[in-house]
Length: 436
Figure: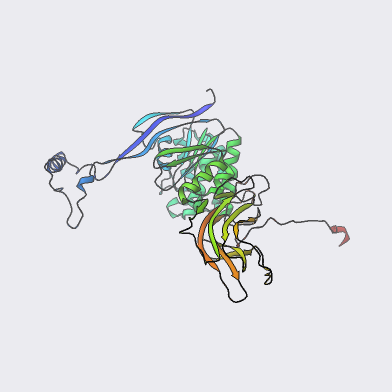
C-alpha cells in the first residue's frame, strides 16, 4: 500500500542462553569436546552451578510477528515483562537484526529505547542535541532551527551547557524525549521511558506524541501505563511470550490484556457439595457483567458493573440479606452495600427456592485499579444469627479508556482517593472587576 511506512512479515528473533564462547578457539574446542563426552564444563568457576546442559539452548524472543502501519498511525505495544516488546522496537530501530523475516521501513526513525539513548555522557546537553541530529542524518542548520523548541520543551535550559553525565535520570529523559520529538523523522519509537518523568512531563510528552501522530508521523509506543496507551494510541498490539496474541482497538485489547496478565475469572460456580452454606442459605455462584449482560471482569470506568449473586434458600424461617463489600489491593474497604437493611422478624423475607440478587456499581465511581469482592449473607432468626462470609470471591479490574465523558482528560498520573466520582459542577460569573 502506498502509505505503508512499517511492514513486518514473519519476523523471528532468537537468542542463545549461556556464555557464547570462552574467548579463544582452543577454549571453545575444549568446552565442545567436554560436552560431547557428557563431562562438566572445564571452564566452570568454583562455586558456580553447572548449567552446561543449557549452554547454547535457543529461546525465541519473537515468533511469527506480522503487522503493517500506515502514515500517522499510533500503535501501542503491550504485554507482560519478557513478552518481546523491547526486542521488537530494537529490531525496528536497527539496534539488533532479526533471525528471520522481513522488516521494511519507509522514512527516518527516531528511537527512545532507554534513558539517554544516543547520548554521550561527556558532551553537554547542547552538543548531544546536535549529535542526535547528525545520527538521524540532519545537518547543523536543521538542528539549529529546532534547538530553542527542544530546550524549552525539556525544561533543562539552565543546564543545557553542562555535561549530561551530571544530569538526573529525570533531566536525562526530558532532554532525550525532547530531541526525539522535535527532530524531523517520519517514525517515532518510544519504549517505557516516560515513567521516569513526573506527571506534568508525562502530560507534555503524550501531547507531543499525539501532535506528532496527527501531523502524519507514525508512533510506536511501549508502556505498562494503560492510561497513557489509551490516551495516545488508536490501535494496540498484544504480545505474550514472543507471539502476537491479538491486535485491534484499545478497549478490546486492554480487556484481553487484563484477562491474560491477571487471570481474572468473571464467573465462579459451586456445586451443591462444595457450595458455602450455613444450613439455611446456600451460596451457589457469582458473576460479573455489564449492562448488555456480557460476562466480563474488566470494565471501562464510565459504565456500570453488575454483580450477580446466586443462592438458594433452604429454610424460610429467617430474615437475611446479601451484602457486597468491595476492597482494593491494599485491603482497604471501598464500600459495604447490603441489599436490604430493614429486617422483618414477623414475616420471613424469602420462601424456599433459588434466587439471584444483582448489585450495580455505577459508572464514574471507582478509581482505576483492581478490586476484590467479599460476599456476606446476613441471616437472622428470632433466636439466633446465621451468616456466611467469603473473602476474595471474585476479582474485577477498572480502567479508563479516556474516551467520551472521562473525567481524567489528558492527565496520566495517579488519581488520589478511594473513589473517583464524576460530580456535577456549576461555574457562574457572579461579578465583574469593575463592580469590586
